[in-house]
Amino acid sequence: MPRLAKTTYLEQSWRIHELTSDFSVEDVWAFRTPGAGPDDFPTMLAAMRAAGGPVQQTWLVRFLFDVRWKLGALLGWDEPSAGVGERVASLRDRLPSDVRAASRGPDNESMPLEAVYELDTESARELANKTVHTVMHLGWVQAANGDYELRMAVLVKPNGWFGRLYMGAIAPFRYLIVYPALTRQWERAWRDHDRAAAE
Image (cartoon, rainbow, N blue to C red; front, side):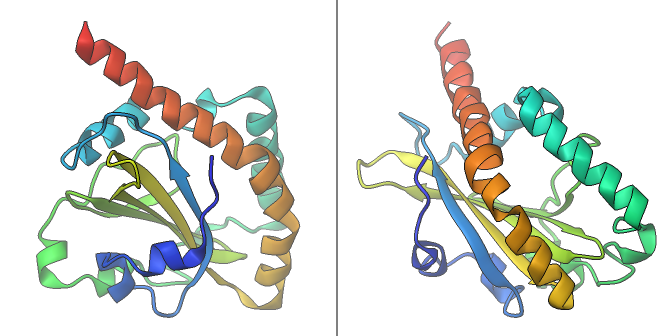
């Protein structure tokens, strides 16, 4: 599960760049999808959805998410007034007309992020609370070996000093626990789909 330099994300001509000039790039990761071709991004998204969200993760990842949501409920971090469309405007309000006309992509009750758009080679979802406004961007990129692979970038706009402290505090959990588990889940989803297609 390689963590990539932020420049590998910024050098791609993604449509998301038009919407997020006021966000910073927090993380960039690559996920292996052996044998994938240029048109397989929708297939990968479908495989990821079939694999389930956080509820299908390891007990440790589920525990971390449970603790986070309980803390958020206790401290009021996740009140509706702090969310997308309330504390911050949705990125959908910034979409150019051609992207707005494309599919938004499905929302999923097991995922706290809301769909912004979904194109042939990239998609974006967002979440806001009292700590940050964050975007998860997924893109489809040709790797050095010629295969295509999934790339994920996490973009953030912290809510003041508290948001910056929050992002710093959760960084070790993201890097040591959450992202490795996410990688295993998403890469297994591709392998399982590939096996099913071959049967």
